[in-house]
Length: 100
Picture 1 (cartoon, rainbow, N blue to C red):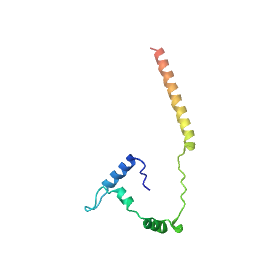
Picture 2: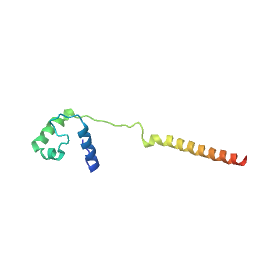
Picture 3: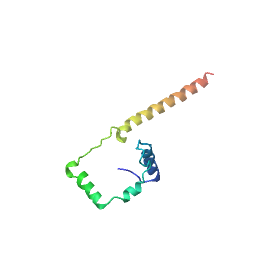
Picture 4: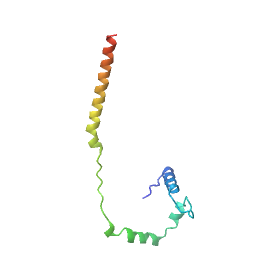
């Protein structure tokens, strides 16, 4: 599905389409809106009948490996380590100044 909700999205799509290898006899930047306007009710009915048929359906379950819940312990450990390292650096620098 094309997500053309903004001018930037449309620009990226047109750029990608223009950079693709195309035949010499085709326009490098097709008129997207003219193509959409040319779609008829019969075209939509054919797509629904052929491509959205019940036997072609399938279910996809997306389970990302990294989620905020899984990242929380790692981020807490990283933050604690960073704070501990900064505290050690401050203590080391303060101690070093006393010996000068």
